Length: 99
Image (tube, rainbow, N blue to C red):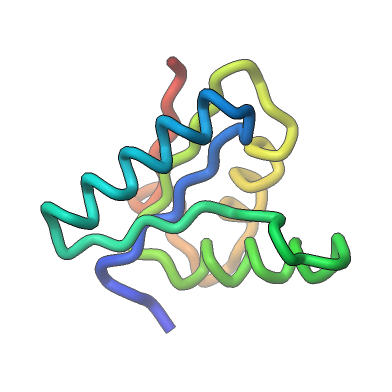
């Protein structure tokens, strides 16, 4: 089910990058009705569950933003997932940034 205020953020999980996105998430959620979700491997015990979790988050999000800085393979996989979902209009719901 689509969550109209949910935005999926696909980004590399290096310590500095993650800290910046965690700060962005806190600020955006404090100032707007938006809910930003980031794929997170904490507590996930298998790669199959992680893939299912990411797929569900992307499918349910009103929009997705992918940080393609550095050509991160995980972010590329997430972009590919979004573009291959039959019910997901990637042309209008996906944004890709390079920093």
